[in-house]
Image 1 (cartoon, rainbow, N blue to C red):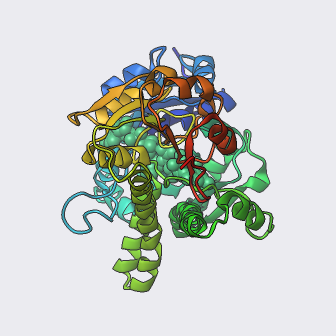
Image 2: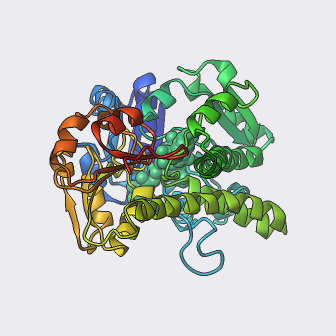
Length: 459
Ligand code: NAD
Ligand code: UGA
């Protein structure tokens, strides 16, 4: 059958970014053929099934509307490379766990393998788009790899970082604050940049499409995540001071957030930020600074991660101190395990480190979560003393304490009278996300420990 599509677009990497991003492009641009490939064949099979590998509100509907029409999930990467004009690369870029820069630098092996594969399989010019988050100057390395074989094929590397947040990915993709597209400022670089602008112009207002030099674009992605995480660590640091001074961190957040210069978002105190990117991207930024001899700048950004670790440990110690300095044999129900609401993703979830610490204190855990229980079981495989229970009422029954790990709306709406009656006494609530009605819970009989405001106790 003749291919009547205007453009053939490939995405290498069918993860949390590749899948949803390409589904949105396919949905908004029926004139393009979009193929998503991955080395993980099981993942591709899931994308082709009725149970997608990623849970995102609105994603199922968009995949259903486009799959088999202009959106395809496939395992033949070479064929995809040969047939495409534009190749997005959305592979993972985790923190390096070995060798120089271990624990801080980005592990670029997946990106590099992809670049080599593109070079080997390509038979015509390609625009290669960095969709994943990489250190500034990665495009230079990619250009060198792509052009290191004299096969007379031209490659142009473009930076188009993704800013979606999990749980709101489809909304973020449909109505982005901005789309950033960086290129070399050469004639061919600008031509390639325009080709990517053309794609987004199908649904993103032109004033929201920012064009920049390629290094600014690469760096902006790391900096955006660092600034977002820095706000959370700032408010979490203040939450510790609030607990010592009878101030209320929610009131402080509101008061400072109404300053239009600061804004109100990302000022919710919590058990700490999680997710696959904040920690890795800040450490990557700090590593880059160190590489350029900017040690003070590196220390500044690293402190954002240190406060995050401190906040998780502080939460555990607060539980321990409040429950009479022993958790041994006590049954604790973790309400939520995902790193945030509306996702089943548990990568770097604060609930994992907290769960492990509580088990170290010899507590017995019951974990509940509407979407993340299967990932929780994988993350905690081999750890004894943990039960997994999808029903929050059954999970809480017989427990000494509830600890809110994830801000799922359903946890704010539970019948806490009913729960209280089934729990051991005295019953405790540690609200790691400040989503519950603390006064109401106290009235029921709970001893309530919010983040960043005085506890409400009966003793
Ligand atoms: P992910 O792990 O969910 O997906 C990456 C996919 O790439 C995996 O399915 C993996 O099998 C595949 N892959 C790895 N090497 C490959 C290769 N050589 N050929 C083909 N496929 C290969 O990761 P993700 O969460 O989608 O993140 C991808 C990138 O996007 C990262 O750089 C991340 O920092 C960035 N990012 C993530 C988010 C997010 O919310 N998850 C948001 C913005 C940016
Ligand atoms: C984050 C960024 O928001 C995205 O713009 C970016 O594209 C993405 O990282 C990435 O590069 O991977 P994500 O990690 O999916 O998105 O989710 P966020 O909403 O940023 O939440 C991150 C963590 O911070 C969660 O654990 C969340 O619960 C926590 N958080 C968030 C707080 O503790 N307080 C807040 O006020 C906001």
